Image (cartoon, rainbow, N blue to C red):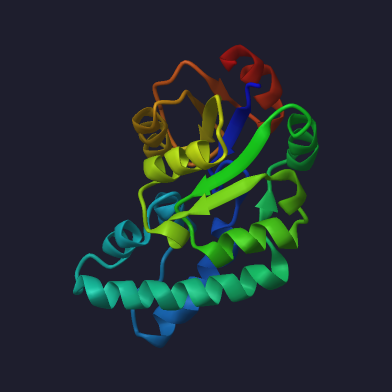
Length: 209
């Protein structure tokens, strides 16, 4: 029996948190006497691994120090999001409920485990997903985590939905089609499949499969 899977990126694809977590991160930066960051800067971090983010946000200090600052920022953001949640893209839950009827659904993100748990539990969305994997859980690149989800769930075919060129590259390395979420953080991504809103996904999925 064939088992088709839809694998999702998180930030910029299922929800957005940039405007909410910037104040939390800036609390850490203020405590350390570092220049604060903007929402635009935060948007540029989205979808990247912790190593990449630390290098981008504090390029002029030793990497291990930047990683420690990043770790403190994560603690602050998780505490905030656990109380307030993020911003789900309009129509998301209805789309997930419909897709769940015919497809295996999973999240594959470069975020931490706690961050993903907050998304799933604060917004009551865990019931729609069959599996999840994060960089925080495996310390593997996104392409490897995509392959991991496919292999351990014995998927006959799969597609990855994401918003950045890193997402596209990860899907390509994993050997599956990519659907670009144009409403997220990426710009001018070359791919045959795209959506301008999450509510368009059902129609495009039918084209892919």
